[in-house]
Length: 164
Ligand SMILES: [Fe+2]
Ligand SMILES: [Fe+2]
Image (cartoon, rainbow, N blue to C red; front, side, top):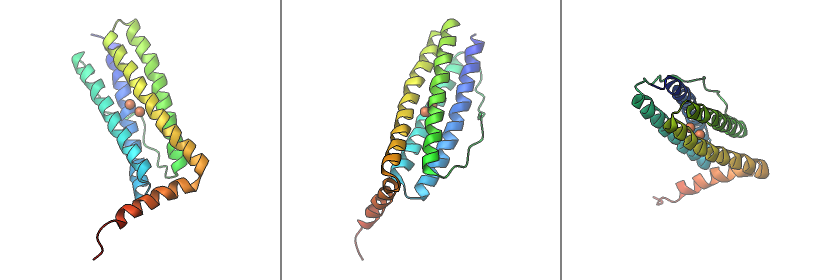
């Protein structure tokens, strides 16, 4: 039943798993450099993508298929923050584009539920795109100061403990 939908849902899972790995890598490096706001954004987005995997997997199993837990690409070892944000925005844009196409394909194959699933993923990916794009704009607007401020905020947090 709905062999093509199962195929598309597995393709989505492969892209989502790649995004999870990539965003976790970015999270580790932002956290290491003291950029808490961005570290948290990457972590939060990776968790959102994990929920996307779960939703696709549930649909695949309902359609009596099986879940192929493979990634679609290796992660890129980017440590420059502006490049991280640029790559992430591009990944989100591409996912939204693909899911739109796949929603239409599922609709043509009379699989309304998979169509709706892809449509709701488009909405989430567009939100993720917007968040990464906004941070990229901030970074362009405020330059290094934007990152320095995040590091200072972390130091302030550490400072607030009792003096002994
Ligand atoms: Fe996703
Ligand atoms: Fe996303």
